[in-house]
Length: 309
Length: 318
Image (tube, rainbow over all chains, first blue to last red; front, side, top):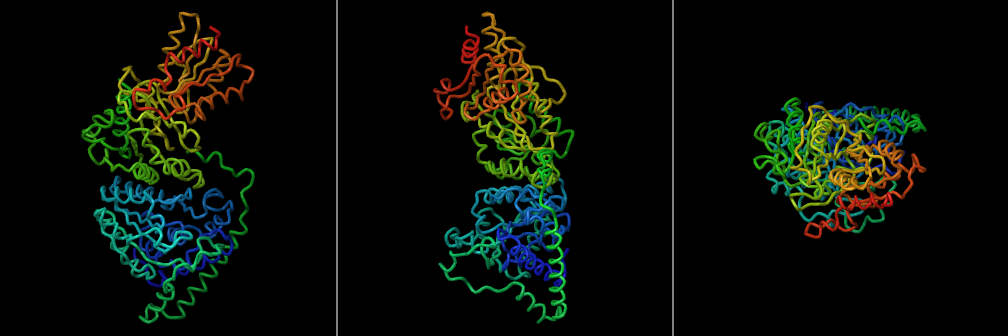
């Protein structure tokens, strides 16, 4: 279900604009700026009944692609009762009813196991559904990730793993925790592994698209390392005094890169792109307004009846 | 049937009735499982539904949780309780949180099966079951006889919540007893023996030991009531409270350690519900506070019928 270029660009704008608004509203939100091409490109071409398990760093654009309501996601970041999690979980949690693998704790790597289970469910049921699961370069070192990739490879599960390598694990730069290309770990599992430019949304869509086709055809998992860069702090209010210890690379703005390509190839006009920005800014503004108006959880909202089914 | 036969029979029945039920574990195929815990299943259901996994407890449990979230009803076996900590994030951070943290939407019908304690196998004796009673969102059962093993496994597979199913290894192949066709409810204790003088609240393998202790003190004129807890989350403390109101004396016993154990929870429940009921201090028995030994030191550490009988005699002043 490949979306057109303007639609892909629009999702990247949604990703950036919503994230900026959320960072302004909650200094503890985890900003995505600079990584939009990887997030959008990994998930934008999936079928509605596929499962998605995006990395925790502002995954909301992925939930929106599944049909989530923007104002309810924003309400979640503000801890409000109208969030999908009813004011309970980590704010980056996603609606399981939209085939999102939810974030119900803040530990990393466990959702990679759960996402692998979504693919297992599809294989057991004999459907052509797939799961796409992204995780960070920090998370890549969790034993859970190794266990999940090996298990998925042994069982040829219909899943695509995308390592969203943004160069940072909180305050540590990747040299301190990764000693070789993450994509090459795929060799050890006997699955395809590629390293791509994570700032180029076309490159991400092409690599993920091929891996998805392979998974859908019953040929098992793939690992894609998408190299991008975290522009901001680990959290929005992060003073980042740790920056500057290492020289930072020159990085492209994934939105500018894509807009320039679409314009020079004559795919879209400048007016169309500007219209997208105007529309998205209005949409985000309205969603934030609704979210702010949502009540905080009250004394009756603890939810004791929701612990067990 | 033995406890193992009963569990395997329950799994086979549910797998025949429901195509969403499948099994994940190590050595569960041609070998027939640790302690023959899956014998016959691979021959009947084949490799797609009896899945042999890499030694990756966290991925096995994680994959089972994910499969449950997306419409299947998996049973995942962690061969021995000693290996359960390798899947701790999935068992503590993931499975029990899913429903509450998704606003009451997610269903996680997964059974995690494991084996603990003393027994014919000799190794892997650690019993960490109490850790899991601490966590809201999990159910934890520990049968003490084949009939309950079968009935509780049926209930566990049909439950829409994550259920940790803990089998005492000392009961794996003996005794052999008749079983019935039905489910046994999770969270309800059972009166294993009626008596007027002392209540022994026992879990898993210690139910049989408590019954032996009760028989040993009977000729001395001491009537012991034995409560088989059967589930440890939810814990049916009301059953113990009712019993203690009659006997006025309480011993708790399980193979897990005493400190912060289920015995403490049972004593606390009695103290909260009827502090005036006890006419003697409550006694908590369990494995001695040492890492559970695998070698021949082990009998020195474990609770047994003699130690339970001694506690009973102390309580009645005999």
